Each structure stands twice: as C-alpha cells, then as structure tokens.
Image (cartoon, one colour):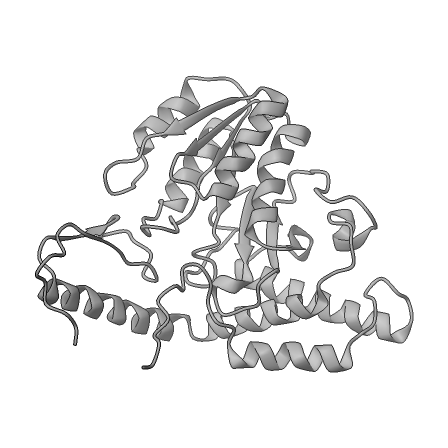
Amino acid sequence: MERIYFDNAATTPPAPEVVEAMLLALKNDFGNPSSIHAEGRKSRALIEKARKFIANKLNASIGEIFFTSGGTESNNLAIKHSVKNLGVTRIISSRLEHHCGLHSIDAIQKSDNIIVEYVENDAHGKINLEQLESLLKDDSNKTLVSLMHANNEIGTMIDLDAVSALCKQYGAYFHSDTVQTICHYPIDLQKTKLHFLSGAGHKFHGPKGVGFIYINSDIKVDPLIDGGSQERNMRGGTENLYGIVGLEKAFELAYAHMDEWSEHILSLKNYFKEELKKYFDGIVFNGCEENSLYTVLSVSFLKIQNQRCFC
C-alpha cells in the first residue's frame, strides 16, 4: 500500500532541486568560508550570495540576515537577547506559541525576573488586538511582543501589519516566529516593521538544521553562540555551507512558484475538508477559517463509532 505523507507542518521533504544544489556544493565546495585561500573565498561567496538572495526577497538589507540552525535558535536569540541587550523588562506573548518560544520566555523570566503577560486567544486561536493595545498602553516597561505569524497546530494567523503598527505606536519591540509562513506568504520588511523575524528551511522543502534570523539594523544584540567572527560576529562556528546553499535554493523555488503552489495546496485542503464531512459526522475544523494558514488543517473527530471507512 502506498503511504501518503500528511505531516508537512512538522517538516517537508527536500525538493529534488534542493538536494541537487546541496550535492553539487558538497562535491565541489569544501573550503572553510573563513579561510582566505581560493577554496575558502569560493565558499564565502556562496554564503553571501544566499544572504543577498534572501534579503532581497524579504526587502531587507544584507546586513540584517544571519544564518542559524533553525527557528528554535533564532527564537531563543530574539527573546533572550532582547532582555539581555535591549533593556526589555516585559514580554507580551500568547499561550499558543510554539514551545521553543514559550520555553525561551520561561527561561529568561527565571534568570532575569522579567514581567511576562499573555494576550488572550479566542476559541479559534485569534489574539485579542484590543487587549494587546491595552497592555501596551498601560505599562511603561520596555516591552518585547513575541507572537507567531501562524500557529503550527491549528493554522490561525495574526494580522502582522496590525501588531506591527501597535508596537510602533507604543514603542515596543516586535519579534515574530514566521517558521510556518516564510516562503508561503510574501513578507515585506520595509512595509511591515519587525525587530526580529525567525525562519527555518525545512518548512518549505529545504534542508533541516538551517534557518535564519532577521535583526533590524536599528538594534544591536550580542551573539547567542560565542566563538569566531562568523556571521558578521553574530554567530560563532563554521557555517553550515551546504545547508545554506539548500536554503537559498528552497527560497528560490518557493518564490518562483508561490502563487501556483498556494492555489494548489489550498484546493487540496478544501477538497480534504469536503471529503471528511462526507465520511464523518460531527467533526470540527479547528482554527480561524477566514484567516488561516493554507498549509495546515486541524480536525477534531468528536464521534468515530460506526463511521464509514475510506475503503
């Protein structure tokens, strides 16, 4: 029996073009990017080419993109170093954040005794923007707002522009975990102001173990990993050259086919929903129907006895 993979919210299979690009780099580009000889300079050029490509797609500057091991590292850096370097004494988040965000907040709260407040979510996972504004308006503490662009379990999305505008109005820093949305939706960082943005390659047919963080050039933070001067002194350690090459190729494919792929995936999601309703009584589709990630479908089966099978 042929297996069908339904777990793309957890990770996607790497695209053949991504694998090919990585294999080519593995065969031909072994130089340490920090070395000054020809092999090293060639590897360095590949990294900077990828950085430029990603920065251009996000409408950011090259110096605002830093490669990491993925979304977890990027979220840790943004949350913890906003406290350690930017003087943040209060974090506003949501209880529906990814564990790497919530656990980072817990850890920094224990070590630095900061104030943590959670904006309410309704039954569909939508955040209460009025409450968020009230929290921002009624407290003079230097604040970081850390909210996922889209929830990884139920797919509900925040209004990134609206949250950005509130943070700008009340002088708060804004970090968004966009791991589930990057390369599925266009993001223009000149139009939508963020201070930190996290992304990971394996959610859009890139390799695992590589991602990036956008850090707005208006702010300066220390590296999370100390060591050498790699990543413009922001992340010590020899760069994951082959992962970065694969990340760039996945970005390239995603942006080239964004409209086509989003339309196709949404049609599959809608078809799946209609078929489920035919075969199961009393099912509930979780999340916000009008503002939901098209790559995620969350379903609750309230009654499964005596249901027809798909045979």
